[in-house]
Image (cartoon, rainbow, N blue to C red; front, side, top):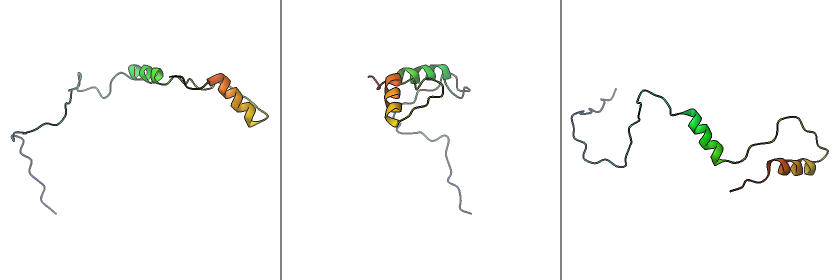
Length: 75
């Protein structure tokens, strides 16, 4: 068994790289899930296909329907 390195808690840390903002509530695991959901929804305008079961005779017909109902992503 190898010896573990000793960590000196009282040692002065000479240099800090970057900035870290401490959390507002350190006991909370995550931020607001609702705020995250709204941010993701606004970031990606794609809503997905309408719900339901759709039957098509060809792949081309299905692709045309999908483009009509979802449309290309707009920026």
